[in-house]
Image (cartoon, rainbow, N blue to C red; front, side, top):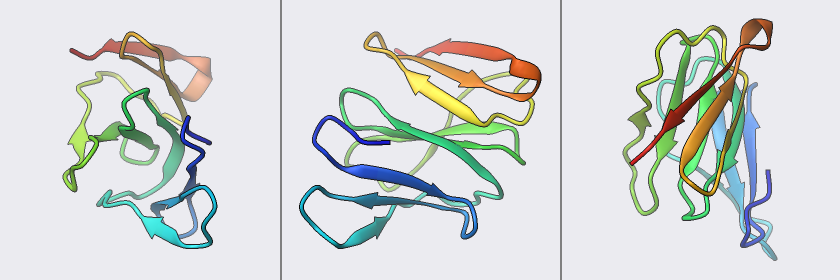
Length: 107
């Protein structure tokens, strides 16, 4: 995933982490997501918050801009979530097992 500022975000499944590579650099940064057991998708919203799905734990997480503390998003009934997106209105969409898509409007 490439954000508006050119930063590349990678969900590194083999190491259960999310990496960021700022445009024009060769230095990768490990983002402070904790407890990932099977990362899925990763995306960034228009403000720069980073989102990731943790498929094995059936959850979606958000890392707010400037924070080192992840937030578990209050989705219900996630079933092996693997992809996600955020629209310009702040609605988070998560795709999971059996092509089920759930939406959550964040305030």
